[in-house]
Length: 215
Ligand SMILES: O=C(O)COP(=O)(O)O
Ligand SMILES: [Mg+2]
Image (cartoon, rainbow, N blue to C red; front, top):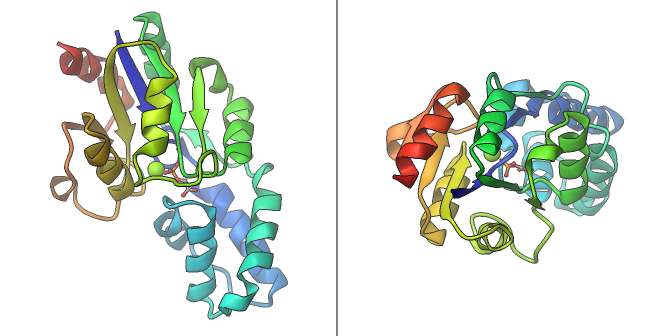
């Protein structure tokens, strides 16, 4: 049996539409132009503070406004669930992996409160026995500490990390665990440029890839 840890945004769920919505709500209050959905996708992956920083820079909002905007962003985040969907085949793949007896968890740079809120809203929380957010420890991905902590919370078994981004590839490399790259998320670089054990474009392929990784 394996221990499988999943990244969240851009891996299990397409959350960019909700995060885009929060961003544009904040920008409207500042009297600034909205950002595009593509911008929002590009800004996700290194946690809430980096997202807000990139959003501000895109609209020339000064650094001095950062703490206030970050607090407002986090305040809206728990309710940012309504436009978010699991990627095609995610639920079926998690059901198959759970049925096969693998232990599973989540390690994301999204703050832990909205992480738990969106997992519960989508009914995905039942699959995961450990969940780590970007603010669960004093460091976050690509520091490998939260990923190590997630694996340590699960029973012994082959470690596997599943994610979508440059940050995830670096985290897995630094943690020394096999990385399975979902091709459909918010990655900016071509698949070949990211270190990974295997990549996949559809979650229907994941249970088979996990079996082969464990063999
Ligand atoms: O940047 C974020 O807030 C979260 O991104 P992640 O789930 O891909 O780690
Ligand atoms: Mg991601």
